[in-house]
Length: 328
Ligand code: NAI
Image (cartoon, rainbow, N blue to C red; front, top):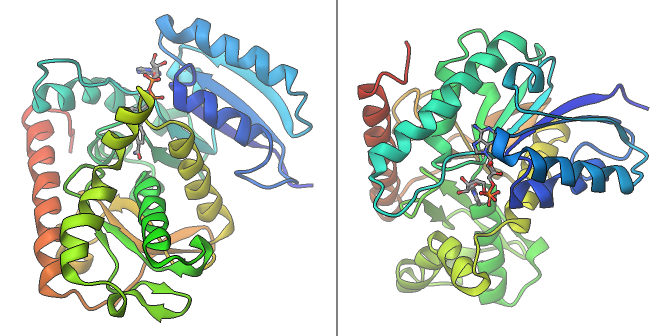
């Protein structure tokens, strides 16, 4: 058996939390031989819901669940944590400007970054799910100067999985036969799902679809899938988001399989994306670290769309910097 791993889930009383916790306890994220110590962080008004989830986790009698704790203290929740899943965030309410949304979340992710910096284990890995995820991850990272920047990531795996699924449906092939799609940029409607390097049953996808379908159907469908789910379900995607978070961490710890995946991480300048912003790239996971896939040809169709999403990230960074949320 492996040594136990401490996993912190923030927003544990919310709907993604409810879908995520049971998968973690069942071993889907870290494997069937890794015991888990779970810490659930909520704000005071969310504690009752998190405590309810904790009761059900107890009733699951999961052999891998070594301990379980619910708290509203970030310091306690992040103490010696190895994996921090930052799901809780401030949702946009009617009439709220984007700059105000970014600032409200800065008030959450700044202190959480500082608490991680002070209390987390040396090997901590951070995944931000709560929106606006990329810029929330940037804020947390900038408030955690002692943690290597590449340990901070934001979730674009759900978008990646949606792209795989849409291609599989269009081409009428099993989803497991599709690989090497890329989500570039921001986890927002400006994201760019790129299929120019993708393979389906080992055939180049670019030979099987045309640019009109990509521009008019595929890209808007993937980028707008969140809204489509809300319309159908009456609430936002939860189980698929939780599943993508599980995929993200599992691959980070155990390595990517079946081609590359997509992860938003602090740019080191690859593909002309300005250094520092948390932007989504094609990556492999090698020896527990994300490694950006190098040397891909970026055509004009792709370049325009990547730049558009990156511009949005630069605007978001400028907005939070103007509010003093990036200390450095
Ligand atoms: P939810 O509203 O059901 O749950 C959020 C929970 O976070 C609430 O229980 C709330 O009390 C808690 N919370 C708020 N501030 C907190 C703080 N400072 N510390 C700890 N907990 C806090 O929302 P849901 O559906 O679970 O979604 C969570 C977030 O994930 C949202 O921001 C949503 O937009 C985002 N999301 C991101 C996706 C992605 O692909 N990156 C996909 C789907 C959702």
